[in-house]
Image (cartoon, rainbow, N blue to C red; front, side, top):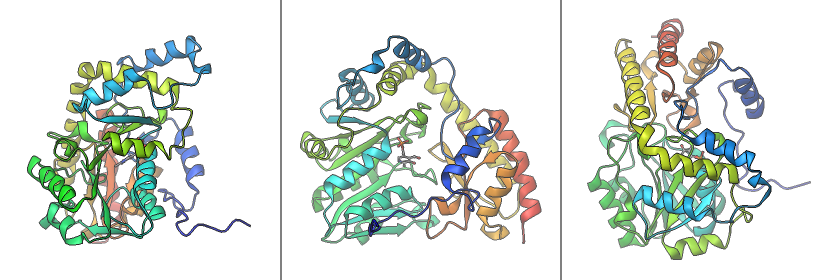
Length: 384
Ligand SMILES: Cc1ncc(COP(=O)(O)O)c(C=O)c1O
């Protein structure tokens, strides 16, 4: 018998919590009519060259070769150029998820502590817990601190064991983000206390304004980059880690994907970055307008509200607390109407009952269907 690890992962939560995640996703995938508002994926793609690049790659049969293990130079250069971080080092990975895991594995020792926030992207806490002494998940679901981990909160929770502060910016699930002043302050904290700032910028391009901590503390910041959201490439599984040469050299020693990241995905990523200027404004315009439509709907319903508006990501949170509707029941209700959203417990251990998370980088027509069903759902399910 294999002994379970002390950090053995909890079973993932699905809207239909009686089902195993894989069964659930088989069902979502097989029903092509399902409206996909549950994973912050982006479904607004049209003629951006990504598909052509992949078809060309397949037709050339290049995929029978292994790619360079750390990513094609062209792709690495394009990512660094996208961030204006040309002096930094980079590794191409199979997504932000692999990037996060590699950083936790490489940086942490069993006596180290990590600071994260709740709500947040819980897989980060889970990875951190595998390699650290303690993960301090700071409660941030309140107006006073702007629904985010502030520099003051980070300082309050910092001790001599702290090794990493995780900054998800914009934050999944709330869409809160950071000002230049706050990012500079975090950079200062990292330098002064000699801790690493893990800056997860997966939703960066949806933000109205965004600042890279790496610009202010290049030797203490690790930037996590993903192609899953703004580029609409979640299923291709590609991302990267950007940091100083010293940090990346260290991560190199614990790589898993020794033979490189999917070649077709890399080809698509190159095309995505090269064409970004041509399509990004349209994606942003549609997502902002969709967000506005959701806000107008929520404003009309007694007792529900959006804690962070506008959200700087492609998702937001709808607080249902005063209606006494369990967010899982709401997610299940919507799922029966073929709308996939996420109950709060997917992104929070402390406040999960309060809210439903919905992403909105989907066609406006689908957002309108959500609005119709959500309104009805609140009236049917509300207890107060
Ligand atoms: C904050 C955050 N980081 C990383 C990821 C994972 O990204 P990827 O699809 O590149 O693995 C997600 C996915 O939702 C996320 O919300």
